[in-house]
Amino acid sequence: MNNQGKYNNYRKYFDALVYESYNYDVQSDGLHIAFCFRLTEKRCFRPTAFIPARPFLNMDQPKEMMDRLVFNIGMVELVSYWKTVCPPVVRIECGALDERQQAFWKKLYWNGLGEFYYTNGIKETEEDFLRFEVAESASPVPLSTPSIQHSPLTTTLVPVGGGKDSVVTLEALKELGIRPLIMNPRGATLECAKKAGFERDEVLEIRRSLDPLMLELNAKGCLNGHTPFSAMLAFYTLLAAQLSGVPNIALSNEDSANESTVSGSYVNHQYSKSLEFENDFRAYVKDYCGDGYNYFSFLRPISELQIAMLFAKEEKYFDVFKSCNVGSKQDIWCGHCAKCLFAYIILSPFIAPERLDAIFGKNMLDEVALRLEFEQLTGHTESKPFECVGTVSEVNSALSMTISNWYGDRKLPALLKSYQPEAPVTQMDRISDQHNLTDRYLEILKSKF
Image 1 (spheres, one colour):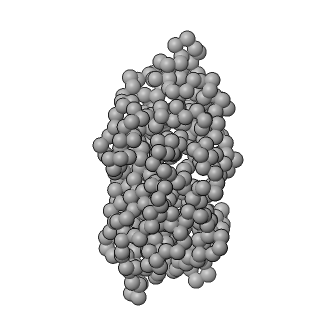
Image 2: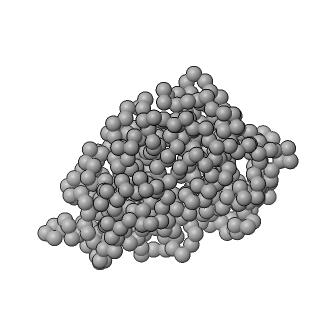
Image 3: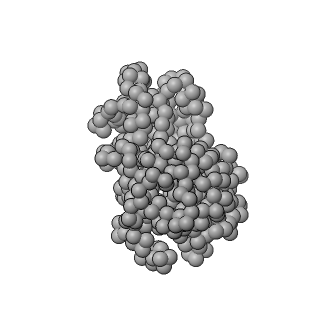
């Protein structure tokens, strides 16, 4: 798809998107948040978020703390609205950004929208695609150490996405005292939390709503594409940590997220899950939000294949976990997408074919309609699928192990008949030293191998 002409025309017509305001209000039912991003005099995007009240949440927080956290949430929410017409300027009227902050946000927007530019066929440079302007009257929110009132029984927030990765983190960190965090709850996320021992009223929920105007513009043909969802989640988790008194935030992003989706380029569907983003985010938080938060990925030192091995030991989750984006609204595995195929492949060395078929409703390796996706996953095309999938070497390792483990006397599935197995290269006991885990968390992870 080539949208270069549309991109150029939009940027000439729409000169700026203005971050006009953010508001938050504590009511009896919880915390209500609203933003205003002004595109033109008559067109304003007004996304909202809501955190339901829970007994374990303290909504009485210092104003300067809330201002700082909510302002930054608005900065990352803004990405989804900016991409509709990609104006060359983002003007900030409700806060201040110094040069280092502007550099952080520009890098996040650029890398987080790498897939957007690639799939839309737009040629642009990091230097020219965007600049920030800050209103002269804007003043920075004073920085102070977060006054988190630590929870006596809970040490760690665990965001739950409904897939295998967060299940592994949930089970591994139970002994520390955890609190599941779910954004926009759905069947799989709530069921995974329940299997871990948490009823819905014990879950920290964040309900985020898009402005219908953006959806309307998308329907009319405005630019659309992937945005860095995990970066948005990261900033919301800071607010969740503040309200819950739980400073440790354990994500479930693995080592594999660092691999580019398009070979030889910066384009990475999982950029905001990468170690590079995690390190940038931790530095930004310390300098501009406070040093009382500890955001890290518990699974960073290990691979997708290792995670799959650990997940395969948690059979109680087999029939409730889901990570198919196509089928997310129906809470199903669609059985026709690259994400379903990858999930099947990465689990296939560790779960018998009959049981795996029962989970997905079919043997995904018999889906000849997914031949292209299979070739992408195994490294025979320019790019991997634009999904959260493992590395090419992990996929090939998984397939080689699967053939060896299960298909000695069985008929090979359709996608494996012409496949040439490679020697497994993923070390199943390897623990990388590239991570942000403290000794306590690292010891727990190592104990699983």
